[in-house]
Length: 167
Image (cartoon, rainbow, N blue to C red; front, side, top):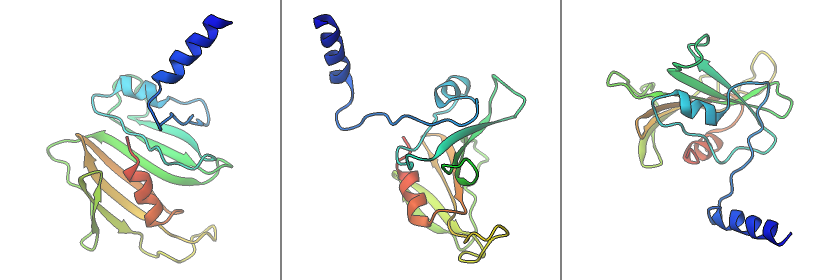
């Protein structure tokens, strides 16, 4: 028992102060973030500030490829696993990449990187399911990774909070 307590104490003390990894709730039986990191040649980011009741599904591209994944998308779903709350595309930055933005996009700082946010056309209106359209699309490049985040269901401030928590 004493040995077990020592091991437990060593484990707890080895955790970073003030930050403990949040358990990711994956839906379906798909690839995990840890597995993605082993299969891509670019830095992988995941948000630290995601509501506890959201689940995650990861889509890889090309979809039929298991080892040579060129990009992937994190799909954070609502607690019922019915609505996509936020999607985050990640891929290796290429010299030809241009951050997608409409002329009216707002320039925003994301973790010291230039990003552009563009709210959806029809913002505030109802979609075909009767849900209010909010949010938009945010694009930026962070440490050699091109990131593109979008949502119809959360507002700009929530999108920015998630983006700025990408580690």
